[in-house]
Image (tube, rainbow, N blue to C red; front, side, top):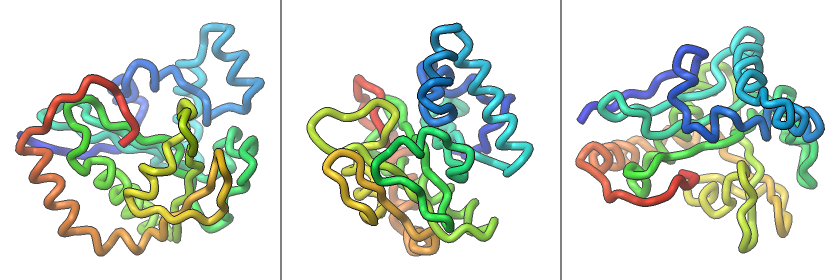
Length: 205
């Protein structure tokens, strides 16, 4: 099987999972997001957000393909472009970091280390742009919060808690630490390209 990772653009936005294409949880503040959903225009708002970030800041996402089929994606941006982040009790994101908004791996490609591959791809991109770290808000507790990555998964791919909270801890990954992952990532890709166990649901990482 062939594997490639491509920057997210308006041309391949349709390759995101259906629910994620119309999700504006992070891209808009709570009031604007509710209005977008009620007006039936969340996909247009998502497209507009990606277009603006691409023009003003640059690449803000990656999609991984296996045999030309979308297998997962990641979205990230400076916190100034992520209005929802201000609503979290552990905000703000550190000024030297970019926020990891969301990452998903599709059924059939999970538990193969692909989530870690996506994080490393983001880190490499950010290092080349002079960004030191990636931060994310995690969801802790028994009931996960939709669109917020589980804290356990963030810890599993190398993040460390920088501001604890019983529900929404903030976690951080120093981008340079991912440079030592090469062997682990290569092994993960070998397992991925060798075929993975099918799973029934869409899960983070």
